[in-house]
Image (cartoon, rainbow, N blue to C red; front, side):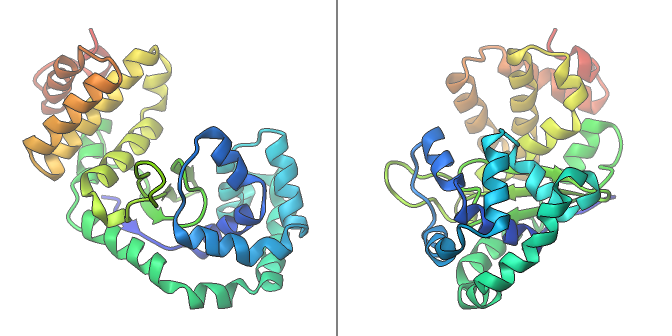
Amino acid sequence: MSELKVVIDERIRLVTAVLAASYWPEMEQEQTTHAVHPHSKQLRQFVRPFANHPAVTRLNAELDEKRPLADFITAALYPEAKPELMQWTAILPDFAVQAGLSDFWTAHTEPWEEARTGLEAIFVQSQIMTFLGKLLGQPVPKEVAVMPTVTYPMLNPVLVETSDTIYFILPPAKAWGESPPWPHGEDPGWAVAQTCWHLTRHFLAETLAGLDETGQLLLLHAAVTLCLEADFDEAEAMAYLVRSKKEHNLPRLPLVVENLRDCLAGNGRTLAEILT
C-alpha cells in the first residue's frame, strides 16, 4: 500500500520564495484579508531586492493571465507535465543563487522544523491512507507527500500530481482577527480534515463532476467525517459533522454519513447512490 509522508521539498520551497517576491502575497490579501506567518514576512523582505529577476517577472505575467498556482509547483516538480513553463523552470536555480536562498533557509530552520515535526506527529499513525483505499475500492495508487508551508501559499492548500507522487502543500490554520496562523501541530483534527478533503476531491474528481455543488459538499464532508472517526474518535467526527452541517446548510449530511458508512462496509448503496 502506498504511504503518506511529511516532507520539506526544496523544489517547492524555491517556488515559495519566488512567490514571496511576486504579486502573489497581495493577490492573497485581496482574496481574503489575513495575518501571515512571521517567517513569510522575513522571506518576503529577504527576496524583495530580486523582484525584477526573470523568474519573478515571468511568474507575475502568468498570474496576470490567471494561470493557477498549482501549475508552477507542478512545473518545478515535474517539468514534463508543463512544457510551456520549462523556460521558467530552467531559471529557478539562478534565482536561488542570486538571492542566496541556501543561506536564508539555513538561518531559518526552526519554523520549518516546527511545522514538519508537528505534522509528522499527526500523521505517524494516521489511518487516512487506509480510509482513502476503502473509499476508492483499491489501494491509493500513488505515494502522498504532505508539505507544510510557512511562507506562500499562506491562504489555501495546493495539491499537485507527478508521475509517482501526490504532493499536498498545507499552509497553517488561519487564526481569528489579526493573530498569526496557528502552528501546524496545534490542531490535529484540522490537519487531517484538510488533507482528507483535498485528497478525496482529487481521487473522486470524476464522481464529483457528476454532482451539483450541494452533492459535492455532502460527499466530501461525509468522507471527512468518517476519516476523522477512524483517525480519532466519534466525538471528533461528530463535532466536524455538526459544524459542517450548520456552516454549509447541509441538513442531509448525517444521513449521507450513514449511507457512506454502509457503502464502505459493503452493506448498502454504492458510492454513486449514497446521496439518493
